[in-house]
Image (cartoon, rainbow, N blue to C red; front, side):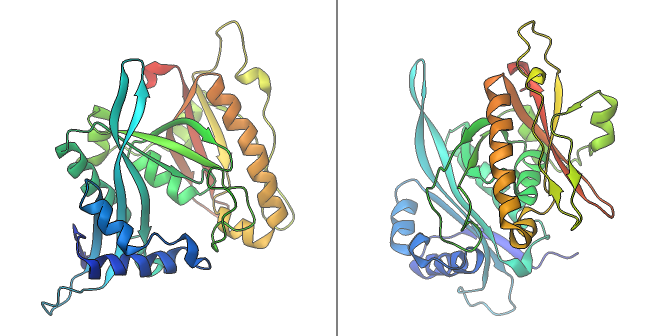
Length: 302
């Protein structure tokens, strides 16, 4: 497919007003949660970064249609040697009509390039761990890793995507100078790993899932022995299944979605406390799509 959009800096008030409007489209229902243009322009002029994806038009009008953006700003994290700088990537959005074209990946890659030029080696952001599409982009394609689970991080959210559920989030780390990330972002196509690869490597499925009579996956608990073994015999590879389409499941059965939130919260918190790290994400296509996080044991996985 020929690309009909381009990525460029978003620095003018007119462009940032388009960022406002795109937020309303992607997260409908709560105008109070929109990051306003006056805050965006302040951030941009003080070390922050807003990149936009614009439809390429034949005319030279600078106010072309924006179909995606990424927004972040500088921050700090604590180390034993004191605070170190990082880039906080706060928002990534793609217009619903333009999803599946690689815009999100291109925006993140452009962000990666700019943050490296700033001399910063870490980018962090949060996302809902039950959203398969986001997990695939963040972990499988971009190479972010995660061992931090945040309960109810944003409090009660009122927009259409999040209303009705606790705002639990993964906080992922994107170590921009690592070979892991550079390989994911290179133009050389990465060998695609699927479920069978990890099954052949004897990965243990933590939460075997069954489906109810409506075709929705039902969450199951995990065997605590998988990640609390005091003898150091923890499996090196684990798989944690999540719904292939959590938003559809939530719309069809909100109580089941709440059950997924509670059950997966316990699983991920337990695994992270035991020393596991999310390092990959695989999807199984077919009549019944399946989605799995891949977790590896020990810090050497980076």
